[in-house]
Length: 351
Ligand code: 3HC
Image (tube, rainbow, N blue to C red; front, side, top):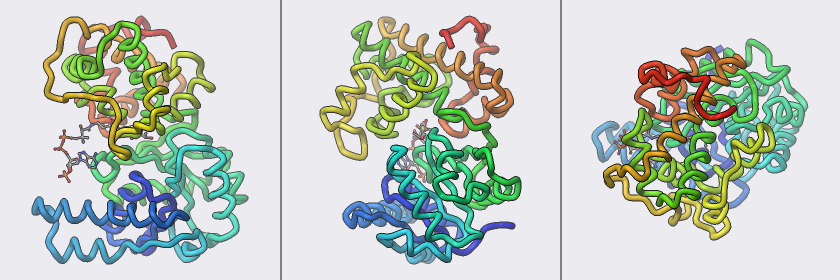
């Protein structure tokens, strides 16, 4: 079955509003839900601003932009989603918040609704249990900025049926994305690799006294990633990144430890692009020799984690590389890049 018609998106943050745009751009009528009226209004504005930006760039006609904007409406309760063919949850990355949303899904959504979570790494199986209908729940993990990055990770929970996984794959394709099926594990695939590399770079920069601009220049010029880890943290949201790395540290150990630089930023309320503030970076700065170790640690960690994901069959080697290219904009995936540079993937950072 190919989904069409009505999409519900729960959580009107950056990710939710970008997903709402994607649904409306594919022709679906989208209801964006947030219990906070201020957050809802901001999310609706954000989704409509994407259409306006594309109109200004000549990528949409006026009619198309108007059509997209007209297909997105707001609501303050999940009860507005009872007729949706598919619902995607994109609330804050905290288990207790997501569990409450999934319990409401169990009570309020139609029996045939495809129920997806955009969690960046929490257990789909646990969320599915909370909904009381575990067979129809799946992970659909988009990447920032979701209106631009082509990848969606599709994650099957322990009880998700084949038919539901197929519907999720079709939905992702209809929204113009490339779905990659990923075996469930904390952080799934791309965040395991990317967050591992980012926090490794943060810790190295902190201990070596390298500032964020120099660290970012070293990484952006030292390998296939399109931007450095500090600018990327600002883009993703530093609170989201801290929460993911803390969860992954709990699951995998100290290699995911966020370090003080990130924790201090979040404590001071500087959360990156969404709040204003964040790490101070100049994307045009040239690379310096002194910062080169940050780049080595970044790519070493990414390669090691990517190799571990392939070994654990989280995805096959080709998909590991493809996912980093499509989800994080890498010119070459980490495993192929390691091979091209003569780097032994078993001899990088510890996993
Ligand atoms: N928000 C929304 N759209 C943005 C954006 C932002 N912050 N930054 C750039 N864009 C859009 C631009 O408007 C443009 O859109 P258009 O094609 O519709 O005109 C498009 O992105 C390309 O932008 P630019 O040409 O200005 O810039 P670049 O070519 O430098 O690309 C980038 C910008 C796409 C952000 C690129 O640098 C990139 O791929 N970076 C890596 C991003 C990444 O790693 N994302 C994954 C993060 S992990 C994650 O999201 C998982 C989650 O669970 C935490």
